[in-house]
Length: 330
Image (cartoon, rainbow, N blue to C red; front, top):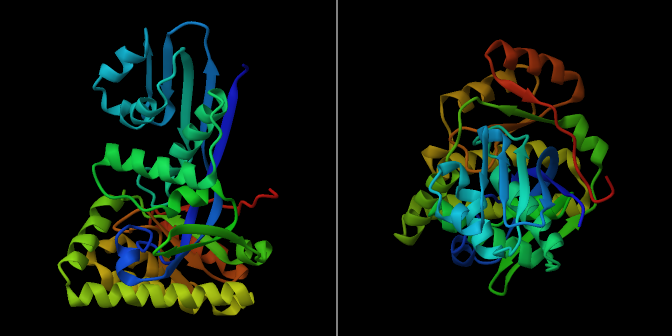
């Protein structure tokens, strides 16, 4: 078999993040997460070998190493191997290969970079080993593998944004998780959406675990904020179905406010500074990406305000990312 190349997008979450973490969605009841696939990609390049030898190139960590066989790799304790080794424990390939991985997402960016890379790796090995998988199976496997190597609960929305390209409506109810792509005005979104990196890495597992802990302990403030996020995501679902895009900025602001109420760990001085800069230069909406505490923020503004916001962000050493939206059609 020739070289296998798999690229997967990352995502920005518009509403309902954290609800994708079990058992929060079961506690809240039927709820939704809505996200968009974006053109910040991860990539896995897999080339099968006729020997047992394995060569790994984890480019983002400047890590290259050759192993004589799978057992030697799995016995290695190098921290750079944790994600890949966890996947290989599942796949157990009998022959060797070379694997190069890369990610365009900033480290701890809140865009689901590691989750996207997991999807890229799963797709590559599924193709090589001729073990086809449905979208549900990819999401379940990626979630379980990441929970294993992160030692924390994981959500599911990041894997869905990487697997299903476009505007995703993800539904959580007692029967499980389902997702579908919604129609949307791609040009309108690209004319209004900006993504800015704070320069500070976030720790989604820690923030989400704190929320889960407080919800299980029946903390009234946390439960109220979680239900508030669910209410916002239900509203967001409706404006997507109605294609009533003018209401997006108000709901982004409402979601962001609820997210900060959910846990003070979701924001930090850089995020609050970016919020002030954004609105001072014409932004209409602002939202923390992912579990916050660092990483990226999403800004919704008229196209003619983008340059002013960009300049103001760059003056404070914040990085404005070049982002396009990704759909199944390209």
